[in-house]
Length: 459
Image (cartoon, rainbow, N blue to C red; front, top):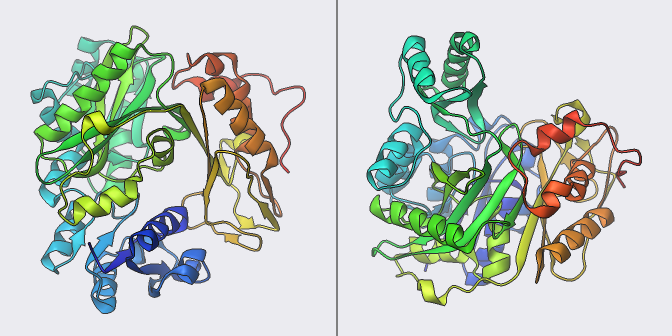
């Protein structure tokens, strides 16, 4: 095992990794920007290295500064968390060139999987079902229109280098396609430095279901079951649960087995997630593979008892996987919601500011992953995620009630600050969600619906 790890991230995931290191007896160093100088992660780490100003491109996305920080503190490994450099194959290669273990898949695997188009081609060859559409990028609007005409509208145009819910446009009519194609390419170039896009059939009323995997460098792998992540705004998740509800055991087994087969086929190692869209007939279609720890990993930990960050370190250190598939047991239901500093009534616009009051909930089987505290300044520079509230219960009804109870206890206030808590509680009240029959269209439906007569209030 490593003696010292550099944590190349911030916020709640930096704390999550730091705590895992403490439990494993690993010394920690964290990088931080000027904006995060007073963060909890900086205070708790054994060492901290300032790597740049608030702008992420000059700090957390500055690969050279991160590697130099790791060399300066004598770290043996770098854990990238999620976001920022976590799926950057070039960064992983730079780490290797400097004698640092990157906690994630090998650079060559990350490189082919980070490109959505090449990942689709690989998974298709491995036998995973794809949504109808182009496997390779479509270089012109005319070719995009031809693909759309063949598969039928609506279609979705996606950036080949996209991620994090960005670089996607739904197109419902042929007349809208040329402009949407040009706009998506321009957005992809601006966000990812790569304007390649592909086109596939947009599955209406589909569910977003993913499979958590653990694979080692010795050819072993296990799946840790499914998660439903269908509650999304702008293709970014708000509520996640494990296992995915209201799907037959046969479908759940098929999705999980297919995901593991595809990951092993491409030589994946570490903790990763294979994402699918599932239609009303329980047919599932491959979306992408994420080569990092997911924001929603705690719900899988809740139902399996397996610490995913611990396992990431063991795999990165070269240890054969400590679990066989028959060792993995699924118990009860885990549900997580993201508490974002956003105003749902203004299209989820961020509402940064200082926290005057911050009192997370507690109680049985309730976990809160957060970097927030009273007096903390939620700045405008980074993602608006402030906390994750995660609960476990032996059945889904009790898990939903427990999450609602926990959210009702959460006290967050500051000048002009709004959070997603009242909106998430609307989700929990929704009849289709309660039945587990919701789709990725749920959030848009709730936004379009009349506001509740007695809306949930922020505390």
